[in-house]
Structures are given as C-alpha cells and as structure tokens.
Image (cartoon, rainbow, N blue to C red; front, top):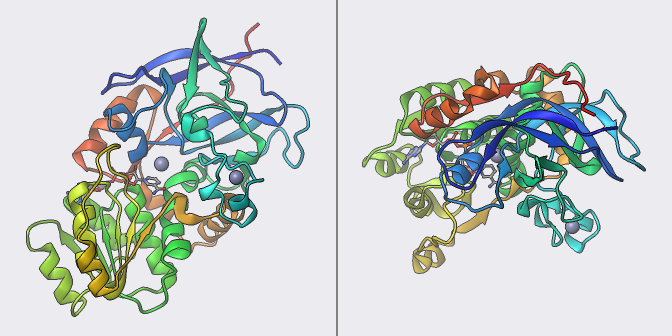
Length: 374
Ligand SMILES: NC(=O)c1ccc[n+]([C@@H]2O[C@H](COP(=O)([O-])OP(=O)(O)OC[C@H]3O[C@@H](n4cnc5c(N)ncnc54)[C@H](O)[C@@H]3O)[C@@H](O)[C@H]2O)c1
Ligand SMILES: [Zn+2]
Ligand SMILES: [Zn+2]
C-alpha cells in the first residue's frame, strides 16, 4: 500500500510543548505491521523526554503506551491479521539473544527500540524530506504507527482501546513490578510512593497479590483518593512526617516498598521505608546522567534487596492477555486509571496536568479511518 498521512504529536528537541502536525507513515516492511492507533496514554516517560530530562533522536513522534487495529501486514507476518486489535510493546526484544531465550525480554542485549528506530535501524516516519523517529519505536501519539509484528500483541476485541493502551505500559510495568520483580506474597506489608498511572497499577497489583497493609503516598490528595479506590488500605499525604508514619503503620518498616515517581529524593529515601531484610523496588526513572547516592553501608547492615524494575520484568506476549482477562473478569478496576479521554490537539494541556500531579491518566483517543495518500 501507499504511504499514509497521519496527525501526530511531534517533539522537536526543545520542549516543553509538542507540535501537532501531519507526518507520512510508510507501508510496513517485511515482518512489520501498520496499526491504526485508537488510544495512546500520556505516560511519565513521555514527559521526561519533552521536559529535556532524557535525550532521544528528534524530531520524535511521542507516545509509547498505545493500542489500535492492524490495517496492513508487511511480508512474512504470521499469527496476526488485518482487523486484529493489538497493544503495542515499547521494549522490542530481539527474541534471539541469551536473555530473550531465558524469558527476560526486558534485558534483551540487542535492543534498539530505546534508540527510537526499527530493528533495521531505520524509521518509517517522515515529514516532507525529513526523517521523524517514533518514540521507543512505537510513536503512538499518531493516527498510524508501524511496529515489528512481535511488538503487536493481539488483544480481545471487546477490550476498550483505552485499557489496551494502558496495559502496554503503566499496567504491565506496575503489575509486573509486583508479580515478577518483587514477587509479593499474601500478607506482606507494602508501600507505594507516587500514585500516577504506574503507582496506581502497583497498588492494584498489590491488592491482587493480597499484600496488607498497602500504604499509598502522594503529594496530591486526589491521587490518594484514587489509590484507596484501587485497593490501598492507607493513604499518606507526602510531607516530613511520611517516613515516621510508615514506620508506625508497619511496626518498623514494610516488607516491600516501591518508588513510582522518578524523583531522586524519594528514590534515596525508599530503602528507609523497608524493614531489615526487606525489598526496595525502583520503578520510577530519574533524569539521565544524574546518579543518586545510596547509603550502601546501611543497605548491607540491614540486608536490603534493591530491585531495579524494567518494564515490570515481564513478558508482554504472556502478560498483556492475562491482564486483559483479569480486567474483563472484573478483577482489575482499570477504568479508574483513565481520568480523561482527550483529542491529540489537547496533549500539551495533558502534560501540564501531569506536571501538576493532578488526575490519573489522560488517554488520547482517535476516531480511526484515515484515507490513504497517493
Ligand atoms: N521502570 C519502568 O519500566 C517504567 C515504565 C513506565 C514508567 N516508568 C516511570 O515511572 C515514573 C512514573 O510514571 P507515571 O506515568 O506514573 O507518572 P505520573 O506523573 O502520572 O505520576 C507521578 C506521581 O507522583 C506524584 N509525585 C510527584 N512528586 C512527588 C513527591 N515528591 N512526593 C510524592 N508524590 C509525588 C504525582 O502527584 C503523581 O501522582 C516515571 O519516572 C516514568 O518514567 C518506569
Ligand atoms: Zn510509559
Ligand atoms: Zn534479545
């Protein structure tokens, strides 16, 4: 098929706003699929980029938490069909290296999607003569995206696109951090610092795992109300008393604590919230090139396990459908995560809301059906 035009949110390397503009999306090549995007979440990782905290090739079509419908298959694609509803994977593992073969695609040694290019090192996106790069090789803040077939996971058609989109990042990250990284057992005490899309997903994962208590911490009271709805047993407004309150509620420290902000200060404080022998799980990602000092002597004396979580330590092809099934069965209240359904034209406002810490997740929704161009 011919290239298509798409309205997309493009970051040009100097924030804080993205530009809403037309791009062209080339046909999928061998082993790739073209997806008509129907929903794209606004994730904290997109914000890190447009706020200049992480560097990517630009111009960049933002968005990596996306879902849509397959509208075209490249050559040699098997197991997927036009019309399939899919959630997109931003950690596009090679499926061949030793870590992929060991069930650890999040530690793929041949990963290039972090460089915002397709597996062959190129991009299918352009604006006139200029190459445009898809953020994390997804670029879901666009009417169309091309991804490797292995990065399009078929989902049940009755699953709302907004939920399918959130499963592709925040939910896979949050639930996976609980299940795969921290391996939380029923009855373990827990703390979640930061209750945005990722933190609320961690809270839901902790409820599924049977953790108790589940102590949610945020600087925004609205987020704490959502955390209580999502399954937190206690909600603490972040201030200078937070650490002492956690100690009191857990009789000396939680079994497991999660940081889901990416703030150097709250990351540094995290091990202080866990008991001797407890686990401190780092999910929030800080600005690049800004190492955070940790009190290693204290960590050693107290036998703390520090776990760095990447994409929930999960396997998308296995986990996305599981999360969809749990939602459809009424066991994961994921609707609570979607605070706003917005047009792509309102995405800069959604980033402003995110910076203020208000609301859960804004999700860009697309109507679909854009005509092909000659
Ligand atoms: N490890 C991974 O694989 C992975 C995957 C996705 C996202 N992330 C990272 O997770 C982090 C969170 O993402 P998100 O989309 O949930 O972001 P978000 O902006 O939606 O949520 C952040 C939350 O933290 C709260 N907060 C901010 N500063 C605070 C403070 N000082 N004390 C208490 N609460 C505070 C905000 O009110 C908000 O509720 C980001 O750093 C993102 O890059 C990591
Ligand atoms: Zn994300
Ligand atoms: Zn690999």
